[in-house]
Image (tube, rainbow, N blue to C red):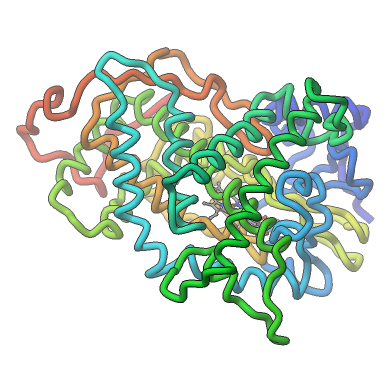
Length: 474
Ligand code: HEM
C-alpha cells in the first residue's frame, strides 16, 4: 500500500500558508512531494484533501469524475454557500447537477454567445472613452466594469438602469470584502462573518446580502409576471425551463443561479484581463507582435474570426497558464477504494486538480515562469496539460464566453489606445478570495491614441505563425 505523502506541519499553519501565500504553498509541497500530496487546508472539510498535479492522474481524475469510483459532489463546496446559496449549480450533485447544467450551458455557447460580440466591443469602448491621455487607472477595476456589464446583459438582457447599477455596486462591494489575502480568511473561516452589529464585517455582509436579494427577487417577480417569449437572456430561459415532471425552478433556485452566474461570470474574467494587460505591457516584444497582428487584421469584421487570431489567442492562453485565475479545480471525491498513479486513495478523499502546478510542469512548459505566448503556437496541449477552466463534469460553463471576451476586449483596447504600466516593476500574484490575482491590481497609464502614437508599419509584420526570435524572460 503506497500512502500519499504529506507535510507534518499543523493544519492551521498549512491553512494560513494556503490563504496568504498559495503559490509558495503549492511550489514548496511540489518540491518535497512531487505529483501527489495531501494538504490540510480546509477547516470545514474533515475529509483528506489531495492535490493532484501529474497530467496522467489529472486525466483520470477529470475523465472519470462521474463514475462508480469518483464523483464531483456539490456539498463539498460548502464554503461557497454564503456567496451563491445552496441551490447554486456549484453546490448541486449527481442527477440534479447534470440536469441544471443542461439548462445553463446553452446560453454560453454557439450562436447565443456570438450575439454578445458586438456588445462586448461596445461596452469596452464606453469604458475606454473615459480614459484621458496621461491619466492613470486601475486595470482590474476597469476590466471588472466591462465584464460585469457583459454578464448583466447575458443574464438579464440589460445592463443599464438603476437596478443594474445598484446590483453592480453591491456585487463589487461584496467581492471587495474578500479582495485581499487578509480578508480572504473570511472565506475559509465563515464563523468570522457572524453579524456582531452594523460596524462588524458580518453586519456589512448581511446588509449587502439583503439588498442584493431584494433586487434579484424583485427582478424575478417582475419577469414572472410579464413573460416575454422573444427574450433570449439566461433569466428568461431559466424562467421558462421545466424538468421531466413539468416542474420549473423556484424563486430561490433562480436567485442562487443568478448569483452564481453574476459572480463567477465576471470576477474571474476581469482578473484574467488585468493579467493580460500586465503581461502585454511588461513584455514589449509581445506588445509589438500582438499589435502587428491586430493591424494586419484591422479590416476584419467577423468577430468570431478575430477571436481566433493565433497570436491574440496564444497571449490569452499564456495569461491563463502562467497564473491561472482558478489555482485548483473543484474537488472530486473518491467513492470506492482506488489507485491512482500507484497511490492508494481512501474512500471520501477529496482530490483537487492543481491547475497551477500542471501549468508549471517544466516537461510541458520549459521555463514555465516565463511569459511566452509562442509556446501555444508551437504545440497543442491536451485538456489535462492545459486546463484553466478545469474539465470533466464540472468544466467551467463560461469558458467559451471568457475566451471570446478576453480576445475582443484586448483587441478593442490595443487597436485604439497606447498604454503603459504606471509602475514598471514586476507584479506578483496574490490571493483574491478563491482566485489568483495581480498584487496591486495592475496600474496602467494611457499615453496616447494609437493613431497618434504608432507610425504606420513600413515592413509587413512577422507572420504570427513564425515567431522565431521572439523570446521573453521574466
Ligand atoms: C477566465 C475566466 C474563468 C476562469 C479561469 C474560470 C475557471 C473555472 C474553473 C477552474 C471551474 C471549475 C472546473 C472544474 O472543477 O473542473 C469553473 C467552474 C464554473 N464556472 Fe468558470 N471560469 C471563468 C469564467 C466563467 C464565466 C464567464 C462564467 C459564467 C458565464 C463561469 C461560470 C462557472 C460556473 C457556473 C462553474 C461551475 C460549473 C459546475 O459546477 O458544473 N466561469 N470555472
